[in-house]
Length: 240
Image (cartoon, rainbow, N blue to C red; front, side, top):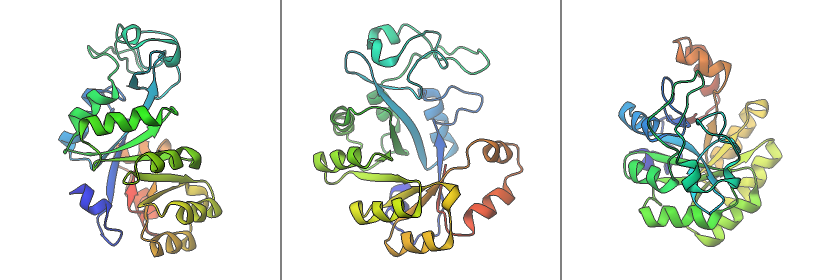
């Protein structure tokens, strides 16, 4: 399973993550794109979590709901009831029958079927951990952030929590390893090097990298082999 591979730094299996779910021809951060990720056999789904005005956790990448729903306004200025009146929207105007999902609704769908990378767009760490505990999805979930203080809070509240620090330099990656001994480190392509990979793998960390933007477009339309070869040659073993 993906969970077993995740915990085996020596595995030759490359884990694949769907950014905001499988939302090509679908709706990002939706239950529909979540179910499609599971149907496709993707290993991990990345999801963005924010907190409403009345303290509920919802799936939403932007600080405002304007781009991805039929409504307008900041998530933090709207109650869950207000947000749920609107429907999800795709970039070219297609409208879903689905409202903005809560984090718990999402976890009930993913439970035992796919791993979850939580991109925390909120400092509501206690709420996120409570939702994971309530749904019994601790084994499936890991937490992503470049804010090491926020990752500290997660580990203080749940020592068993899996975290993925984001590093923006070799030095930051080294600090992440020293501070957290994490199972995976998110690296940026700008400082991707043999020495970095050797350092991370020597500490039994898996290596996550993105192919978003132009590279993602090339992969989507069948021209991705060269991009993936370049990415994988140094040892990346988790690709979003």
